[in-house]
Length: 621
Image (cartoon, rainbow, N blue to C red; front, side, top):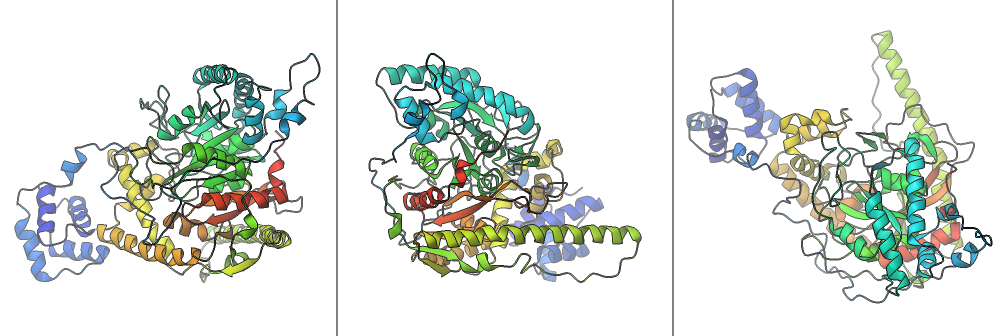
């Protein structure tokens, strides 16, 4: 039988080692059970790999197959863990990019809740802590700092709510109750002794279960990893511990950071529990929206903060790539993964970001950028654009219309009729939701914002996402080759098992070409942002792919709630469409900012949030 290592060496010897060709050709030989490679096999593999192989090269391949050499198996034998990054670093910073490096004192807004909270506490009876379940981080911080509310009382209240609503919403993987109670008691002791650490001191929070926490499982939401324990704390966990925050739970994520399906079920949207919360930061968004944590930490590679924040009516911040260290977080795509807060208000996001950003000495992508929060920043001085074509786009525009051939069977006609009905329903929902985007522009103009139309450069952005899928397949290659991917809950054509397998057919050359195209796009997008501090965009447009590729930050915030006249949601929620919630569910708006300019971005987003007040509404559980 043929020796695979020798075969790969032979391919490398004629310059084919860095393309899809060797793997395809080897697979053909294995399937055929062949004793030798034939010219026909070479032609078939070359056609699939989109390379031309001259006849003289075919003979050279055949002649060299018996040469002893190392091959892919030598790398496989290393059993590389997910925590090992490649010797390549994505850097969103281009020549001429400027950002602040000097840290200044934080300036928060005032809080009025402590005075109002006194109304909840009747003389001679304990306060109604449930009344604080949906309070902002800023307000809770003031209550804890002034010792009107204890960290222990808040922690016990949130733990009780997590236990009460988890059976319905399925957002908890692991309660960290023992750790939380000990942290809360210590926070109360320190505050009583005058050792106040800052606005997160004593506040309960939840972590997406891709962050490692010493002594607790880190499941990645995936079957086969339910009992995985990594004996360390993620950098973000360490920083929140240092800030005095209290970790109450490890919250759900879709298996290996896709969607809202995990090994324990489907995480639900508090506004409509029949619907999933979307993902992959499914638990953080659901628990935050349901008033079961003060704030949470999620992650985004391509929509995993944006989408669940939209579904659940939260305020989410996807920071610039390279602002928050990912040490101790599951790797999906080394060039696109980002950690960020999911909260109830924009200022909450700023307070959490202030505690978790900056270099940790391990994540080499983190820049020496400073984040400076100033709640009094004059947002009226900022230059604001809006993605004109995205706001004006008609639902379904730009999508190819396939010409249908006559149905050959009644069953085929039935499937086509169902597909047409589903598409019509999608277009009706999208047309209904369009009014909220239009209302946002009207509101901004009423606030005195001068909106300048702007367009993103035209590039094949979706094709560049091949980098994400290739990196994800590499991060979980052992799962694919061992066959353990069958343990994952979701097994559809668009789910990880099939995606990982498909990614093995991406040639190394094409990965590099996608990276080069990405660099061109980054240069072009950077020129757009030279003229703007903030760009307003629909949350579900092409900007989501573009800015995740370029590394620009985004704030996603609630932008209204669908009325009783909204189109009814579909019977089955596939998790791909954020407009399926139906009456009473939230919609969102996105603000984009310059790299490492989160201070300006958040100040502007906060002004809009305060002017609209949508964040003050909460689901009725």
